[in-house]
Image 1 (cartoon, one colour):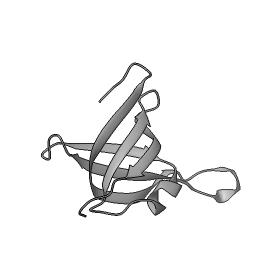
Image 2 (tube, rainbow, N blue to C red; image 1 turned 30 degrees about the vertical axis):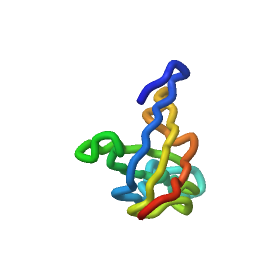
Image 3 (cartoon, rainbow, N blue to C red; image 1 turned 135 degrees about the horizontal axis):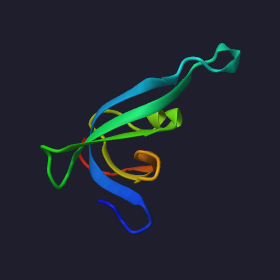
Length: 89
């Protein structure tokens, strides 16, 4: 849900995680990547939300994890933080 600071927060279960190429033509020939994470919402399991962020977030979550994600809406839902919640996976 959006809040007044321009952040979007969502709690749900990770459905899909992957590394996506965002720029393959960078100086020095190195591609740039970002993490993509899709969660189904706890409040509405039929609804999913898609987030992007630093590839380091891929090490923090796996499919089936219950998570709380805070993302900024200023740059297209870029992940600011992920908290893995305790509970059944």
